[in-house]
Amino acid sequence: MSGLFEGLDDVAGAASGAPLEIALDAIEEDPNQPRTRFSERELDELAASIVGRGVRQAITVTPRGEGGRHRILYGARRFRAARRAGLSTIPAVIREPSPDDAYDQMIENIQRDDLTSVEIAGFVSRRIGLGEKQADIARRLGKDRAFVAMHAAVAHMPDALRRMIDTSPIRGVYELYQAWRKHPEPILAFCGSRDRFTRAEAITFVDSLKNTPAAGPDSATSMEEAQTCSGSADPPAARSPAQSREARVGRKVDHLDGVASLEAASVPRAEALVRVGRREGRLVLDRQADLGADHARVRYDDGAITEVALSDLRLVAVRTRQSQ
Image 1: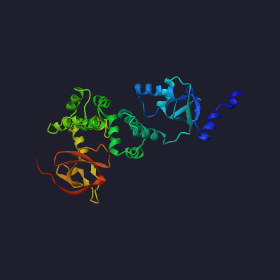
Image 2: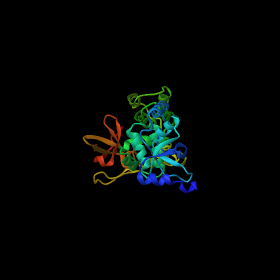
Image 3: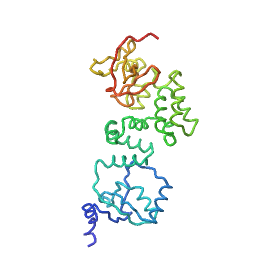
Image 4: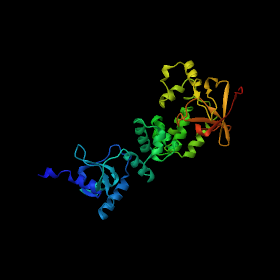
């Protein structure tokens, strides 16, 4: 007879939107939720608050699944703290899952600054693995492309750099990652010599390498290796050094502001001058921009290289390269 009423709490809760007291043992966490790390201190503090005042805000869960359990949509920290406080039930609102839940979870945690860079990088990698483009991920998160690109790059970083993300700012790690392509040994030595660094320290070290001969992935013999790391080229063994050079200079640059496309095969003899706002620079055509095919690398007269959206570029001139 009791089985006749099983699941009626789902119906009532979903219909009214009112919180129900649901057994903790009948609830499971979402294995794909963005937050994977929980502060033990914060859980203890929340558990102490729950002992004194109860759970002040209901969690949100799905209706029972095939295993007979609800899955948490929002409130994993409250759920863990309630269990730590010794409760057997927790107030919960039952709601059907939505395709937007994953992004809503991310946005909520990002706004509260509750996620680590590693957790954000994991979310971005999963969305890319599902076939989503970085531009779409950025739009749905309400973030710019650079934010997504930095976290997407984590999957392609060497282990020494990836380990630093736990202790150092993601922007500083990303500065080093870009320099690692040309100067792998100094960058790895820098990471191995310290437990943490600031973004300012990373930029200062990268600047010190500007006059150092490139010995890394942007050189003629090892560029393919870095591109394979970022998923943008064939394996190194597939090409000879001569073929690699042909591949690098055989790309095309899409037309900018109505100017016909420039064959990159002429790069050894010509250079493209562009304007970005009020600044002028030269296109760098040695590899695709990290921010995607709709961006280009621009070198300014002071030696700085930035990645700029093609829509923000204006082609000024194509002229014969000055002999070095």
